[in-house]
Image (tube, rainbow, N blue to C red; front, side, top):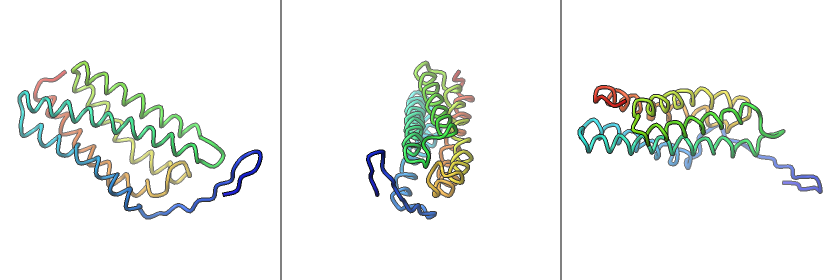
Amino acid sequence: MRETATGRTVTAQEPREIPWLSIVFGFGPMMPFVGGAALAWWLRGDAGNAVLIATALWSCAILLFLSGVRRGVSFRTEGGATLAQMMTMLGYFGTGLVALGATYLGWMTTALSVLLAAYITMPVLDAIAARRGEAPLFFARLRPVQIPLAIASLAAMLILALVSGHV
């Protein structure tokens, strides 16, 4: 690292391999998606609905967190944040807020549909961002195996919400 009166130069070596902490903190937060979807289907009734809501809230929280990850990465992008980084961050954040509001209002099919759409875009957008130097290289390898756990869980919960008559 070299600092001058006008700024700082940072040189970093980015691994293509997924760091082990990113495996732990990447797949760990996916477990409540999978467990929540399975439990909601198994319990049904009021208990199942409570698990469905809790898992939707978890999904919102993770999406909002991932919007912050995208913003944080943009601080270290060579040349400054790009429009694509900012739009992706705002898209994830806005979608997370819409889903949070829909969950609060009890509009579970709306919340789960919005969440599902956001998570479906993530592996694609993160792979593009990794190739463009707007996200860590390992995102292109991590997201395609990590995020399908959330996608499958959200799809299962959406089907449950539809068959249970949630709006």
